[in-house]
Length: 60
Image: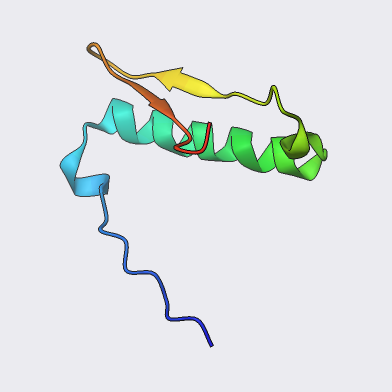
């Protein structure tokens, strides 16, 4: 049996705008998977957050 992941929560460490962007980006990834588009080599989704940073899936 696999051990459960212990990922630190980031909600209290980011702004409300960044949290909303993270939630929206996660929803976008779920839709991509729902429609079976997540196996494509060119699947790339990222989102700009306030400031100079952006969010991207660590696997590409």
